[in-house]
Length: 185
Image (cartoon, rainbow, N blue to C red; front, top):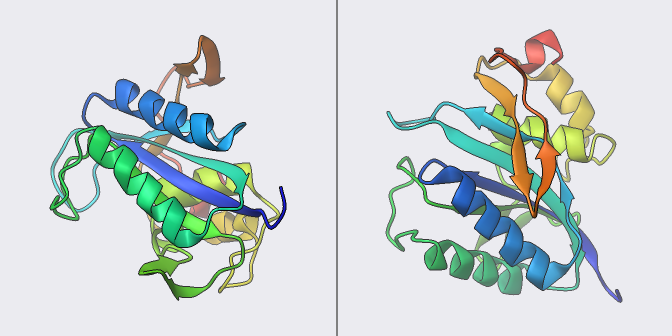
């Protein structure tokens, strides 16, 4: 692809989770082709009382601008029941967040890049570190592997089994475990 950049997208859902995550993967794959897909993790809601979330990160190459990609992600969210005026800390049918767009840093087309949640939430950083361990945060400069190893917030997160297109794309554990960067998981 001429002029293509690597992008990473965070997917999350806590309402009809499996269906909405699959719908997000389908939409991204249909438009952008093969996806690199992290393990799917379950985590508790952050910032509000709610059903646990499923979260993962996908990566792919695209020539799309930040504006074009961001518009597409919002269209997919709305097509999957996301209210345009949904509060920041509230249940989500499907949340698609542009985490990085190449090495872009700052506000681009109204989107803050890289997304702040990379450094704040285990459910974003852990799958990103798994998918792109040697890629570097565009502002911090450290690799995602280094950032995850240094992560010291106590957020519960555990891998879950997940199938998409008839294939097991994520293998869960037989029991939930507490994992966060402080223990290097």
